[in-house]
Image: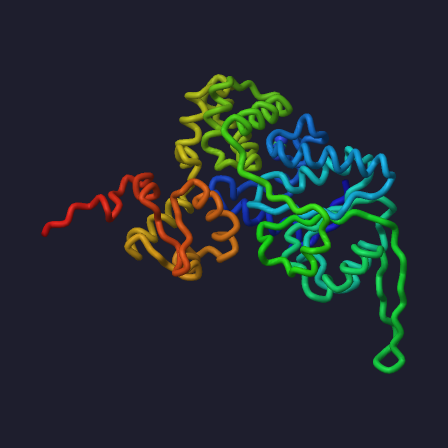
Length: 357
Ligand code: ADE
């Protein structure tokens, strides 16, 4: 696997956001995080837990492509961060026996960035573009003929003497990943043969992810310990994997090294991650809407400014899980805390508060 983007924008941006998510995780080196994630990524479908519908679809697509001896269709995976979009792309590459080049849209700012990558691809190779909704117009225009006809249209010379050169490139497969499928332009979206949404993981699936990671890292864990971590992982394997490491530190320093239910719960309490997996930022967000805006609705810009976070972090990292957990609601006039959200914070919802008259 080749990670092309090593500047400050691409892949690291995503990690910066997720690192920002939890103040206790923030301190970790982002570089180290990437290495850690790569070291535990499953390489085949059997070890890739969850997303069963997607896996079944992909198995058929991959087998058909192998039988036809043709490259795979371009694919678009979307959904909240940390659900395994890069991981599944790596599994696809490994199963097809091809290399994968990984980059992210913010690293493809200039035409020569995208042209350089496209020209470097070998036949059958996979190009993975993360945050593909952030691709600029020029890069998109270069990508269209490349995706459709495996051609790069290059312009040489200036204005009247300008000539367009059609340069063929090897047949490749583009895998795009995004947290915001709705922000993709429709011409780009239409060029993907497969479009699939990744779902949040169930507690059972996350328990398996935790057990698998603990085994790889040679950490002793009981099933109840794994489940306790899974419960507080917000349906997200990336979070589950980080929590395994953090709880394991506690287990070694404060306990006898084994993660059981008590060790997991006590460690996660200290890390201020509650029974729903919410951290300080999530609770601050719900509290803000309740206390300052009577439970909402309130606009996302106002929320982000009040929390000193950027809108993208709130939208991409905090909100998806709060919405999915039913603690927050999205309305045309802004965000509202649901009765469950009030209950979770131990505050009576307005409908439950007694009126005096
Ligand atoms: N690590 C991250 N995502 C995973 C998954 N879906 N299965 C197993 N391990 C993972």
